[in-house]
Length: 297
Image 1 (tube, rainbow, N blue to C red):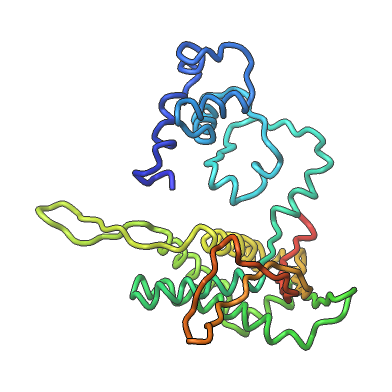
Image 2: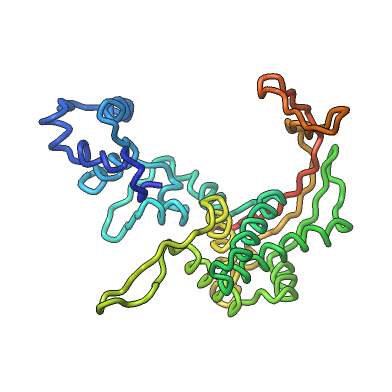
């Protein structure tokens, strides 16, 4: 967490965050690449990634992949503002494929379950229940959709099956679960609220006091931001872009490493072996994925 006091590498960015420092203090006068910046960051105990972001603010020319410009999530995280900028697209015939990829999203049932359980924990601790409960209900809705659609799956290949809905069909299904433009707007407000790390604790001597509040993990936040981005496209302009999407439920199998559970000895005691002696087993596991595919960027 770059905002945490323990992140000394982020706070060390000021040692290498300008071209003047790089040239006059650290000797990077000629052309240098990202590896030079990483090496300097290691030597100064400074974060090369955030140093590069600082240097970006004063740069005349910036090279970046397509998705830095097209993916709303990356643009938000990188604080990219293209107002008044000149864009030069190399190999521009690839732009449509990248746009389709950026406007699509896939989530598996394990991610959904972990997000739900994380919200369960926050609700049990009575933390922002009015905001966490609607988000938890949204996770439950998607888990129910996956569960209730098992009978609709059609075999598509070896140990794989699939069910595909049109954008209009999935909106009708969401409507049955109570997800419509108005309720979706409320869900976005709830997400914004739970991402706030501080909240008002009161006023003392005319000064507003703030307190730190536990928030959802970055993985759960990324899940909600990504799927809300797709839903925003589906609901936008009175759902005019709905038919540009297909939603697919896919079921397949994967082999994963799983450590066997602890077994008591003859006396009923659990003796856990040393980690180097614990052997994991390859287990065939069912994987279910819900994909929102953008067909027309």
